[in-house]
Length: 282
Ligand SMILES: NC(=O)c1ccc[n+]([C@@H]2O[C@H](COP(=O)([O-])OP(=O)(O)OC[C@H]3O[C@@H](n4cnc5c(N)ncnc54)[C@H](OP(=O)(O)O)[C@@H]3O)[C@@H](O)[C@H]2O)c1
Image (tube, rainbow, N blue to C red; front, side, top):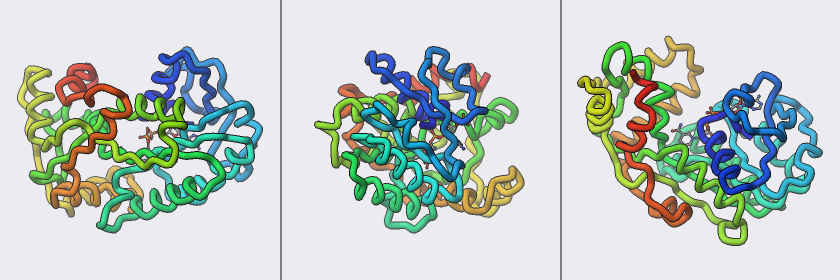
């Protein structure tokens, strides 16, 4: 599921590259053909459906299980998990978040923990992936300000984050889906190979684009106003702000060796990520 999403598309690509048969569950409006033109086995799957048909899991050995950022994600996730178990799924690879392991409270910490616990308590074997912030956030949330204002605007102060490339998460998820005998009952924190501040990210994107970028570190209240004005729901605003606060306190800088062990190579670096995606900011 989530095959058109930031991580899901990378999971599908990594599985197809291994020669694995992949089934995608997607809602009717999903642009599967545009994002994954080689996909043939696509079944109807809308997470908002009260009754998810267990038959869509027929013949499927392992399930990539993510939940989009929606407010009722705990209840929705339980419905999906129940259908997958009923449909005979053997192994579940769950996309969680590093925030699930925080000491600091936040809604996403609570929700991710609750869903992770449900997966652990289920009849399937499982692997839980807890990635930190994605490099792709600089594409998704900062492309406009980078293009139009040559700036990155976030309330991160001098906080460092060990950003990860979603393609690396996809590769790690594929390994876990293909090898439950190795990865069952493991909870992996996934990070990149080193931590960066936003100043460093701005300098690297600026170097590749050939024009200077400025990091504008704003106060939390200002960021809240901007996010609310952009139409984000209050719970999502606070969830996003919690990540920046945790980074300012030094809680997002740690590097974990799990990713390299799973995929057998070093994590994608900031330079590699920026070079690969330069068109998005030009
Ligand atoms: N961003 C980060 O830095 C970060 C860090 C750690 C963890 N995470 C976690 O990663 C998860 C989000 O992953 P992502 O960024 O890959 O997601 P994403 O890019 O937002 O993609 C969401 C996916 O969910 C699908 N979807 C949405 N509504 C649906 C529905 N009603 N029925 C069926 N499918 C539906 C979308 O499909 P269509 O729209 O095509 O239908 C899309 O494939 C969250 O749990 C988040 O907490 C994110």
